[in-house]
Length: 400
Image 1 (cartoon, rainbow, N blue to C red):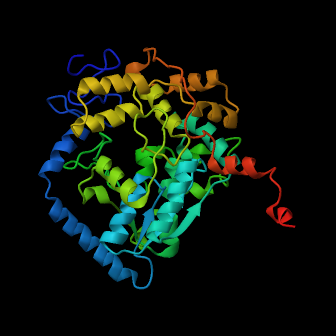
Image 2: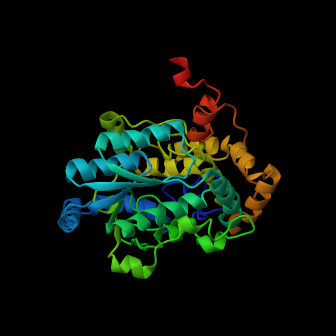
Image 3: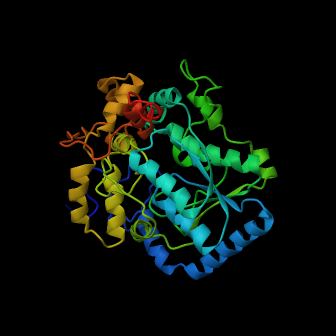
C-alpha cells in the first residue's frame, strides 16, 4: 500500500499513521501528516517539568481555596484513565477530590467492578447519577437519528452532570484526563484549538443540545438532567476544567500497565478493538465505534493502530492488517440496540447511510459477520444481575 493510500480507495490518509480525511476536524500539514501525529512529535519538545510545575500551582491554589471542602471534582467512569487520574491526584499531590460519575446505565460487569475498585482503592467520596432504563433506550434511538451515534446521552451527561455538581457544591475545579491534542486529530499541543468551557462536550462529542432531542417520545422534562448550568452560573462560581494530559506526558499504554499492576484494574474483550482497555466500562462501546465506521469509514482499530504507529509499536503495514480485521465487524451490541429501540436492522442502516461522510457516500462499506460470542455479556450488568437473582429464594427463607 502506497504512502497516503489506505483502506478506502480515493480517500486521503495521513502519510504517517492510518487516519483518513473523514475524521472530524482532521487536517494535514504540507507533508500530509495529521495533527495527532504532529502532536506525538511536539510532545518530545515540550518542557514537561515546567508544565508539571504549572499543574502543581493550580492544584495548590485549589487546595487553599477549598478549606475543609473538596479540592476538586474528578469525573470518573472506572476506566483506565480514571484510575490514573485518581492516582495522580490522591497519591502524588495529596488532593481530596469528589468523584463524580454520570452513569450511561450500560455498565459491563468488568466496568462496574473497576468503578467500585477505584473508589475503594483511592478512598474517594462519590456521587453518581443514573438515568432510568426507558429514558436511556429512547435516547439511544433518537441519538442515532440525530448524530449517527448511539451515545448522545453519555456524551451529554458526562459534560453536564459534573458541571451541575460543581455548581451545587461550589467546587470550581474539574480535572479530566487525556488532552484533546493526544489522539483526536482535532488539535495539537502547539495548536490546542478547543479549550474547556461549559459547552466543551457539546462541541466535541454530543453535537446537539437537550432541546434538539425533544420529540414525540422525549419531553423537555425528560431531558432536564442533561441541561448544562448557565454561563452566568458557571462564571459566578468561577468554574474551570483542566486535562492532566496537558501537564503530564501522556502514555496510555504504560499507564494502563501501571494501573493494572498497582491497583488491580481489569480489562476485557472490546468489540471492534484489538486491545481490551478502551471503554471497558460500557457494553455499547462497540456500537459507538461501529457507527463511526459506518459514518466515516474507520473504527476503533484504526484509532488504536494510529496510536501504536506513533509510539513505534506497529508499522503502517501491520496497522492496515488490524484495521481490515476489526473495523468492519458487525458488533454483537447491535442486537441489543435493536432490541431496546424497536428498530429493525434495515432501518438502522438506512439512517446510518444518510449520516455517511460526503467523501464516502457512494462507497459500499464492507460489514463482516462476527464469528464468536463476546467474552463479556452484551447486556447491562444491572439487568443481568437482576435477571440472575430474581427467581432465587429469599436468603432469609433459607436460614429459617
